[in-house]
Length: 101
Image (cartoon, rainbow, N blue to C red; front, side, top):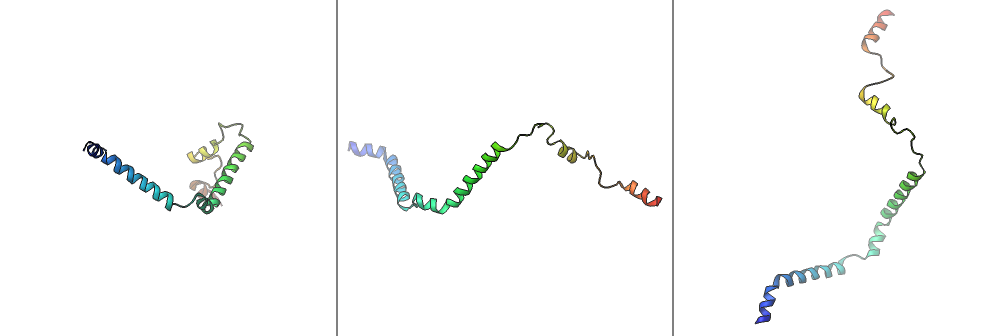
């Protein structure tokens, strides 16, 4: 009776361990082999490796910009509306130039 009482004390632990090993065993038996997964995904692995090699190569071989403070000022000025060159004439100037002709 002592052994049964001790086993009942740990019955949830035993049930959990049995379920865990049953699931682990079924995964090992039913899961595809590593070479099967590698054969299916080799184009993805290869393209990812080539992309990473290209990133490292271009990162090491590209010339760094000497003046980093003014690299985006032209774009920021354009977005902010501080255009240096106006491609279109304002409406008043266009009307005056058509009247003078």
